[in-house]
Image 1 (cartoon, rainbow, N blue to C red):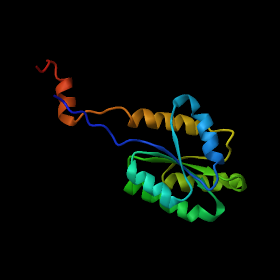
Image 2: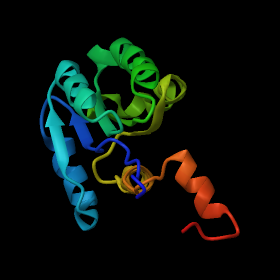
Image 3: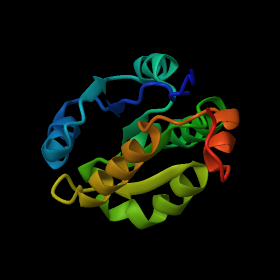
Length: 153
């Protein structure tokens, strides 16, 4: 009897001070049935990641947390390599989006948005991420057996 290897349970974690982005993301992903887990601090977000290391994060960028954001995104790739993150800039940073975008991408962000009206890129990235991480995967031995030209009995 084969025992399939299943990746850790994935979550969509939104880390922001208010719930404005979470509401918009819920609306953008309504058809996908993805549950949004809200956190207010990086500490809470990190605890969620420890429970579900293969999660998709949407984190809020403010003027006061730019340096921390770059460090946390870098840490994310090291400590939780199965996770992915997008950054959501507050309204006061909209004019600076191009200035910060490539620094954040280099630190590990998949995308940066500054408008809750245009979350289509985040919805597409999240849908693709969850499609990849939630499918059952076989262990190496079983996947080799399945590719052989004869059937195992």
